Figure 1 (cartoon, one colour):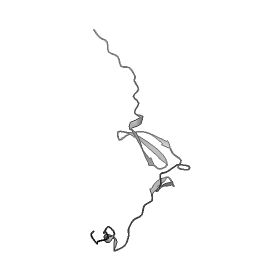
Figure 2 (cartoon, rainbow, N blue to C red):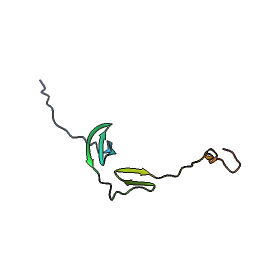
Figure 3 (tube, helix red, strand yellow):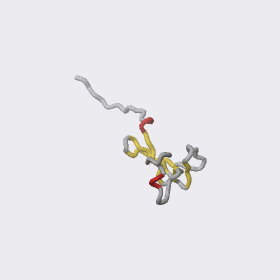
Figure 4 (spheres, rainbow, N blue to C red):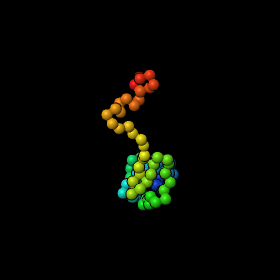
Length: 81
């Protein structure tokens, strides 16, 4: 007769953990399941160009076309849109 026992194990899931910034904390998820949180001060954070962090938020800077003539901005030199 074989006796089975339950033994504690560890699985490295580091590569599968994602985070969402919310109210100054980084909420950690594993496969969309909340697993923890940590405080993240945004002072001194290094961001890629066109991104900035301030007031516990992350912003993307971009250029957009505005105005009533915006529909013509994608036309080529020959007038084709």
